[in-house]
Each structure stands twice: as C-alpha cells, then as structure tokens.
Length: 256
Image (cartoon, rainbow, N blue to C red; front, top):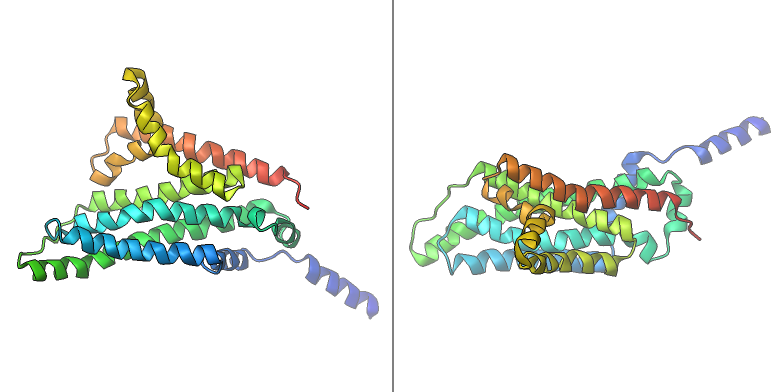
C-alpha cells in the first residue's frame, strides 16, 4: 500500500504542467506587475487622447482615427512584451520558473502567445474607440462623419502591430535585459533614419533592413511583390534571427 502511494505521489510530482496553465500564468504576468499596470494605463490614456485630439484637427474619418490610435500601440505594446519576456531574469525568478517547468521552450511560447494576442486585442480596441470618437467629433464640428475603411489597410495595420510586438519579443528573448531591449527597440527607427540619409547605399540598406519602414505598405494596403520581399528580409533580421538565437540562449543559460 505504502509503495503504491509513494508511486502515486511521484507521478503527481512529475506530471507535466498543462500548457493552458502556463498560458494563464503568463497572461496574468502582462498586467499584474507594477510596470505592466503602468504601461497598460499609459497605453489606454494615449490611445484615447490620440483619437480625440486627432479628431479635432482633421476630418472625422474612422480609418484616420483608428490608425492614430495605432501609434501608441506600436510603440508601447512591444515594450510591454519585452517586460513580459524578460521578467524572470529581471526579477531573478528564472530558477523557480524553470524548476517548475524545465522545458524552457514551452515557457517561451507561453509568453509569446499572450503578447501577440494582446496586440490583436489592442488593435481591435483602438478601432472600437475610433467609432464613437468619429461620431462625436462629427457632431461637435457639424460635419458628416466618414465611415469608409480600407479592409486591406486595416488588416495590414493590425499585422504591423503584431510584427512590432514580435520584434519586441525577439529582442527581449535575445538580450534577456529589459532596459537594453527597450533602448534598442526605441532607438532603432532613429538609427535607420540616419542610415537612410547616408547616400544611395544607406538608403538601400534602410529600405531593406528597417522593419519600421518596410511595414509601411501594409498600413496603406499597397503591398507589392518587392515590398513583400523587403518586409520578409527585415522580419528575418529583426524577428526570426534574434528570436531563434534568444531561444537557444534561454535553453542553455544557467540559472541560479
């Protein structure tokens, strides 16, 4: 009897953690830290302020107001993703996390899924906020609201938000240091802007390697074959390569 009971206890201890539970835990981590709560509050305030403010300086166009809300999303959601993926290393809880779930790849995927889902949800929220804002601005200014929206542009804009979050996840996974990853993410567009002014070679490099520039045709809904090729190259450089290298680093990194 005691032997059977011991075996049962061992099996319970060694039973793998369900992936759904990992998802729930990592989703909760997006918002239950002080930095996460601050980022979400700032993001919501900027989305609302941006939509309302833009509405009073331009025509009440639904697409314009929705895309205006996308600017803080594209800037701050990747920062939130970086904080989520570097949390264990910043707070020195990696030992606990990887002791409870030694398969580190599953932990990374459980971190990626909520961040990407949050980017999609934030894009939807921005579009929803833009609807009453468009109606309100049109009523206040006494002009007709413009409700037309390019479906391809809307899809591309949402995809852009997801790509920016993926870039944040990739940098966070590679560097495992929140301040360093955030600085690289925020400074990246400025550096490529400088490179683009360094003659034809610099302009060509920026046109192919600057992810912030290569996603532009997605937002306008004017993606061509050449634009898709440039987007693919920059996505490989800033998402695929650092994420793969970071996953290898996480798998091999000693924790203590």
